[in-house]
Length: 127
Image (cartoon, rainbow, N blue to C red; front, side, top):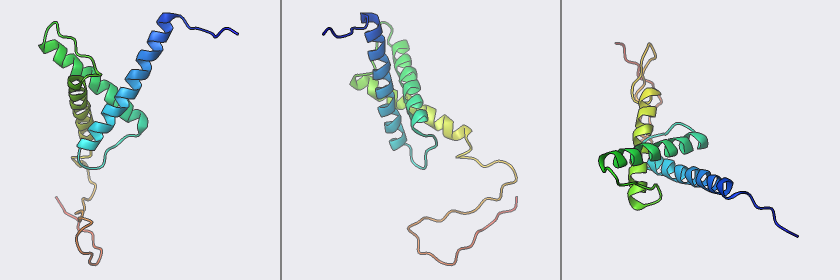
């Protein structure tokens, strides 16, 4: 029985897509591990952030080092891709309202979970 073979070009595209998805997920997870605090997004957002960070990071390095192509699967590629994903995650949190609160929403002081618990009170601030 003869096995079914895909054309060489289809195999190369499938390999490239799967490598980018896997590498993007790893880079996105690294960026989320470095960023302090609770991070938004699920698995798809993490992967997209990693792939976007890889494109941005490797593109910036390739721009400044003319003629030097940076492959994502290298130590330099991993470092700049994680940095790019970190920048994307920072902007995502900034635009999503994780750093700043706007509007007439009452702000509450958040206590550290390591502090001794007293009676639960919420403190509201009037602007």
